Length: 371
Image 1 (tube, rainbow, N blue to C red):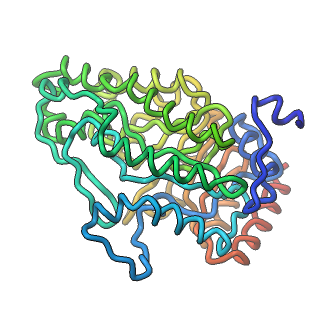
Image 2 (spheres, rainbow, N blue to C red; image 1 turned 45 degrees about the horizontal axis):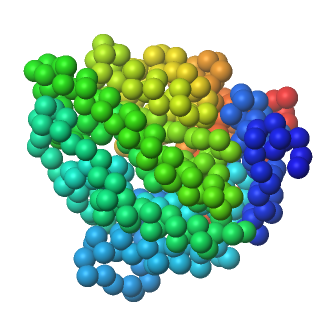
Image 3 (tube, rainbow, N blue to C red; image 1 turned 60 degrees about the vertical axis):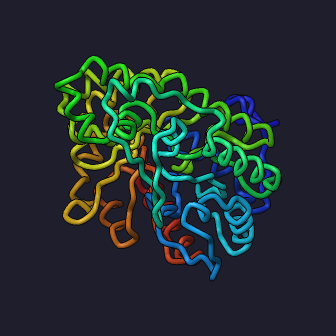
């Protein structure tokens, strides 16, 4: 075993789909540590790509939930796609059991609706009422996540990593449990119960993670979630999307302590910073323990051009934290002119493998010139 694996408590992984796995992983770990191994890491996909419309190949289901719940279809079609895909740079082959962004809330019995590309809760509970909810480990959603993970694990050897599903505890779970209106009203009308609700899932979240992390590591996989950045120990993508409607005072009062609790448990934390309204909380977010970076999601419409956010990204880099950004290929030349490559993790939607190789060469020259 090499010193790299010994230093990080890891184990050697060989994937036929990614012969440069070691090299890519070294680059990821350099990024975790605020360093750069040759060039910044690159993932060839974009944020929320897994939630886009797909061609289902003529396959039909009784209803939309049956499609989401079709374990064999999702795992088998993923495996069948591997020979047709390239996993260049720090793009890892990962099967991700996906039942939508609020499946964790659904495991508490909160009504859950499936759409074409996402899912959502339907709840009108008050904060006081929502405090009575308990995580049902016999829930059909837990059973389905177990089934997806176990079936994917059985077939994963030498092919891909096993991820764990999108989990939103804390204040985002509270919003799913009550509905946004009731949560926001509760900040003023029932603040003590909202505080309790925001912390209600703390321990459940860790047990939920451990359940699926153990299943993955049992077959030699790593800890990896929807962002696709693996860890030998544990990786967390803390978030608080609903806090884009919170004042800094409300953020500190209702959100911050729960985030601290999460980050103290996990070895690697990359914060999901979704949009400019959440950016007002950046300074306090950067004080979270074991925070290795932030994923800056700049939004759509007038917020979409990444270049307008260069000053913000520079400030995050100067803080010593890594920054995950979505970069369109046409934006890359100006990004390379204006930003230091050290600390960046680039997510790029390339056209094909040839285009990916071209972009890698460009980024390597940029990084070499900045040394």
